[in-house]
Length: 176
Ligand SMILES: [Zn+2]
View 1 (cartoon, rainbow, N blue to C red):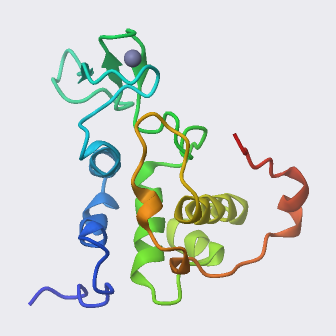
View 2 (cartoon, rainbow, N blue to C red; view 1 turned 120 degrees about the vertical axis):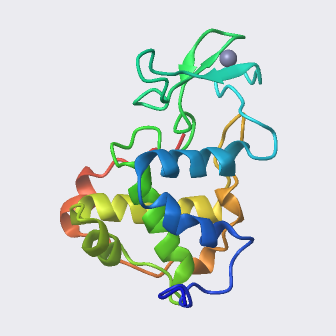
């Protein structure tokens, strides 16, 4: 009797099925991206590659640190799942990224920047940037010690879309 579940296109390896949950709260989203990134290797420090890492917890509540930080025992640096990924400099909550990926995967025609804007409430400029980054992830591999697995998404999930004029001059797409 579950309603509304039927629309998701027969999934790319179960990722799509897990995304709706990840859209619901930030911790679920972060943990989704963590498992996508580190599910095979286990958590891994993006600074030095050490796997001797642990989640930082709030001392009072015992919950995960509000920024979902990890610490590496090898180099003693902190990191999150965003470090060394296209999300690194993004202020956008991970659950909105989760939504954008879900929409990109669930729609036969792919996703457009306009759709991201409409559904998440971000500005068109932000939506456009997310759109571009999703497309980047689906077409080339991100450089990282612990490589994210989003590169497995086929590029045809992403619809064509045009950059807003106001963005074309100001948008500094990082090509590191
Ligand atoms: Zn390290």
